[in-house]
Length: 349
Image (cartoon, rainbow, N blue to C red; front, side, top):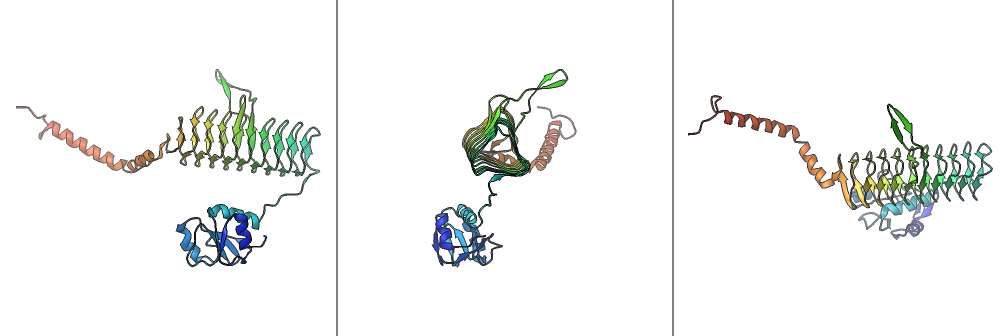
């Protein structure tokens, strides 16, 4: 851990200091767990009571907190805290070089400052850009291209021909370029459709652990710049995802679907194939998207509908047993009225 003064951290985070700028910060922690020497943050006013009780030496906030001696004031406290954490505990990068226990084909192109660790395999025609790190057990297929300053953690596979941009992070055991799920029925049997396309991942994308991105049948499966994908997400063949989109754990996207930019898909969202989701759309957790969604909306439920409608439907759903009982009682009373007091239908006259 690196020690810095509060004013040094403020300069790095683009904020200002209220209090003792010379206070030495040695660590970071949550509001509840912080000790003297630590810095923490209060993202919103609802956390100010916890901030007042915190033992931290300094607190990052967007505005002054009465009773707190040392503050780092920043427009976005959470972002400032990220910068502070990076300054106090920078991510260690392994030394450049190729392990003697790695297998790198003579026809591969390896950039400057690359670290290729034990049991990695880099096939013929593959390219690995400057400053990229391949942790143990990474596989890079023939003709695959990985850009500059990427990090591929243990067990990642980038299959043949796929293209990875710059500053991409891929976590353990994710697979880029597995075959798409494509078969043709021949009577009772299934005949595999050759998957001859690739996956293209643009700059600054991060894939969590055990993410699978299938290669296209023809053409490309693509993930746009800055998109972040959580663990255990399945992206099928020929899917196209825009920029700065967030997809949370266990979501699944079926083939040939187009997802716009700045979309947020909650955990376990399922998206049907051959549909389009517009830009700036939010989809609530465990929702099922079965048709196109227009841009700039929030949707929930199965099938996904506008979130406000879903909330109203949910409030009714909880009352369904009671409503069913009332309807049965009304039907019974209506039948009695129709049949008359002695079981006979009333007569006109």
